[in-house]
Image 1 (cartoon, rainbow, N blue to C red):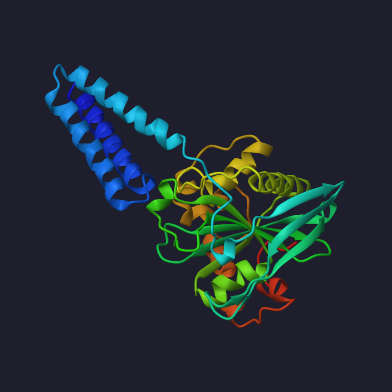
Image 2 (cartoon, rainbow, N blue to C red; image 1 turned 90 degrees about the vertical axis):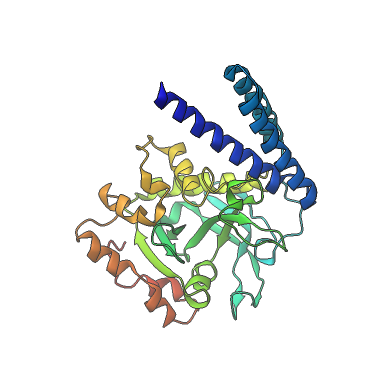
Length: 326
């Protein structure tokens, strides 16, 4: 009985904390109004739980109040019509013609620094029948527990196409891990040349970048790319919310994979994704002919990239000597 009370108490405390934060972050743009709603919810919730007897009646009252907040939160609509930051100003769209896919708004910026760049949005047509495989980036900017993931497709006769799942920030916003759990950012797929999305991180942000060549057959790589592109085109018409837990750079990749293959067991490293390369090694998704630590050492490309100009051969140079080459 004591354990049940502890579990119920913990769940209620988390519900109060989450709902109060949702009202604060996602409520009225006026901070006093949002703060008043959040404080009112917390005070009313505590009043119901501490003063109403029997306890079951207080819990029922709180449950109804929480459901009202949950219903309101679920009714918030994402939008493609905002004043966006320059690096996410345009959404990609895709049209298919047999094996050919034409992508509008492929990002290929020319950076002088992280914030000083020439915004270049390109049209790119790819031949899906020439997909040769998938490469996978893990990018660290702080904690070794958390990384950013980018998937890049390689082709027989064309440069790689990288797709990074991120937040779509407004012009006056910056990313916040806390705000990512609420309805503050739209989901955004950066479809980009590697000179942009990887060169930005190696040359201007100074992040630690690891590149792994996946052992994905071309047919499966092609199917995954089509699934990505279909989702990207839908998002241009039907925006969705980003969520740091359920729709982030890694869990969204897993959703795409689940569309095409039997579901693999969930693993804690999908959330603590700084160890995702370790999981890929255990599942045989990368080259396992080397010990994992050796593979990881050879897959660190930041130093090599930083000595390379960001030119037409950038993608080829950062892949030189990588294990599992195709």
